[in-house]
Length: 144
Image (cartoon, rainbow, N blue to C red; front, side):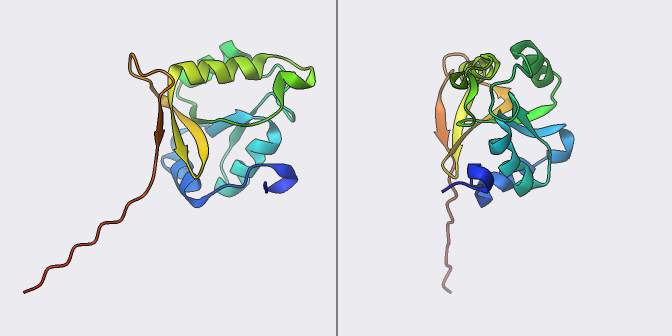
């Protein structure tokens, strides 16, 4: 079940990740649609860019505008799996942005959510790769 207005339910690990160095960015993340963005914005209390407006179908930002914001270091992460986009009869901008991100950055999965660090382009030959982030605790005991 989703969060507010069927927005995403945000886990603790992804919230912690989005908050790391959050003050260095205008937007801690970008995702398609305002409903999806609002869940992350409420969880982090930081700005999250809603690509394509409410349903992800508005032509804002364009791919060129989004690329410029990424190049300027204004957006830290892209969160996959959002919005409705062009399927609702709107602009293809959100689909173009999603495709560019997937082709340019390495996916990682945190709390079951696919996201891309927009500050770290994928290495040559690894475009579209996926990594899974998990936490492992190791305990050692010394007996004397």
